[in-house]
Length: 385
Image (tube, rainbow, N blue to C red; front, side, top):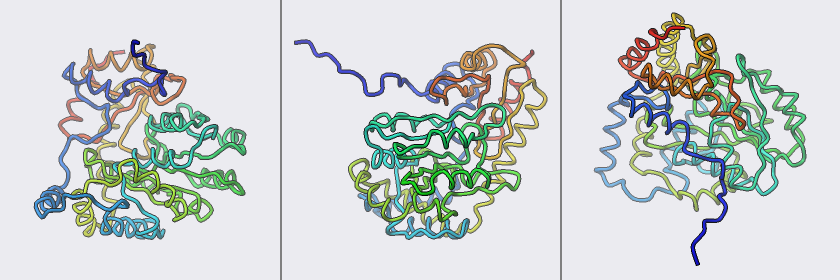
């Protein structure tokens, strides 16, 4: 009998656009402003701590929930930044990056037939995780140029079948942040329901122009039902370390840990100790916003000399733009053309929509060395309409 592969659980999923565009950038020797990672070194002290703890023998399994020292620093961070209390033992768990935490949260709660509301453009890990667990994705689209949430649509989509709502704040790729009016709408919608909220806040410390990050944990009506997912990769420029965390009330966290232990069980031990020691000397997380705002403003000011129509970037390390004045091509085709002809790789917004909605918008990552940004700007300024 000839072996035949059964039906795929994710038949429509292919190689991610991030991998695709980074590979193309490499092939074309293009400046890579596509995938969201820094091309500069992290703090030398942090790297030294990693080596120190490895040499000291901290190389075996860490506890399921993460080392105590790091959980305590996360607890201190939430109290310092937001005046929010999370118990380090029962309400905080270290994860292998935020994506693993998000996948585990969805796996722990979403069952066959459960509906999950997500907001598009959406980071690409949400939908596959929902589908793999038998859930049904309910998309709420946000549109160019404002990418505001239509809360009436959210309310109409909500039913007894709604198990979870996934929020991404600040939003990747649009760079928008939630305002108080958005929080009020969300509170109203979930009141008197058993809906769980997954709040992906990996860019929490990267907001601009004195606009505050409103973590859902600040609101008692939301905190009781909310998982907050965070990322040290984004906070400390160490995306390759894959260290994140989730915070939630103890009853939710107990269910999370049941799944987490059979997923990764535990997370890189010396890296946890290194981050914990590094955070002991950090009392002001605002410096990361000013660091990235300088980069955003530099790229923004340069691109204003082009025919790109820039979106308002309130957070994250992505600046997005409409290219309609330059080309009438589809956004993915434009990204390929830009990479091959002008040697700058970017990401099309259509990749963040289930139905590939195309509004001629692309995303630039500005978490790059000054030299990298200058090379990209020089090439982009040469584009003729």
